[in-house]
Image 1 (cartoon, protein in one colour):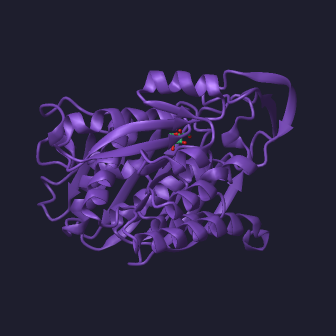
Image 2: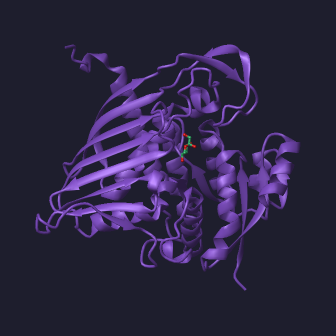
Image 3: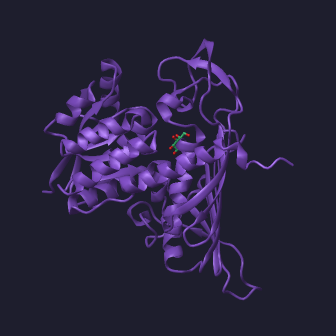
Length: 388
Ligand code: SOE
């Protein structure tokens, strides 16, 4: 019999549902040293939380995260709330000796992220682990891209071109949901999806950004107020309007430690693009290209081949030797968004069971947070803008 490890999750909206699916299915597909038990789900409304617990497979429901953190049957706390509560819950859970998995971005400010990274360092000395949930690292094609870069197949990296394009707020009547509020989310497209491309780019290249120069914009400055906990579908709105105090789009350039030049674009105004997390990397020996809208594919150009034969080649990343893919279906049958969360909890559980530091750590989350803050500072500094 494998040891059982209890999980308590805070939040049951979009991310909570995605994480629940991962906790439910991970043991069925991966042979893990421990078995997660979905001990308790925490949310604010007793009725809605109890219903969500039943639907998503949690054994109990709580309405106060402080109670959840105290439970003897909870050894892992999974934080799926908006960014304004990450720091408080994570720091308390780590102090209580619970391992923590926390949604991205790690926090709403650098100061909060620093406190979380400090709490994680201190907890690690007691054998308590913490990980930030940058799930796109767990797309098999992204993990394969990192492997190819690490093996030197791209040579010296020259360019990194990253985009995260969505279109769910193009309509100016789309309501002011929490992701569009600074007090809840910290920033707009920048923190929500820009954070993903910064992490993905740093993960694939194995290098950190050393500096940035940025532009941000809020195209729609007022929106109808949202009723209750309206989600990405923008289902409920009131007659009143409120001010949008976060960015709708963020564009920035940067430089990596190894000298590669980078460009980043995060926007929710790319009409027709639904979840296009894209990255292209050009090196002295080859290039890679990925688009999440075709997430089972990685494009690779080997520049060492004879020019007559070289060119971008489509790798269908579903072979048993590809990262994570062998646990699922026969080659060619493909994975989806939800599998990235299953891979995330698999890696987290393995690290917890082995007593090793999971990746990405809170320190990695803090590094991304510093990039987001640098982007905001650069965008606010109009003295750097050259008028033509
Ligand atoms: C909304 O932009 C969102 O759900 C993000 O919050 C997620 O992190 C991303 O995976 C998909 O889009």
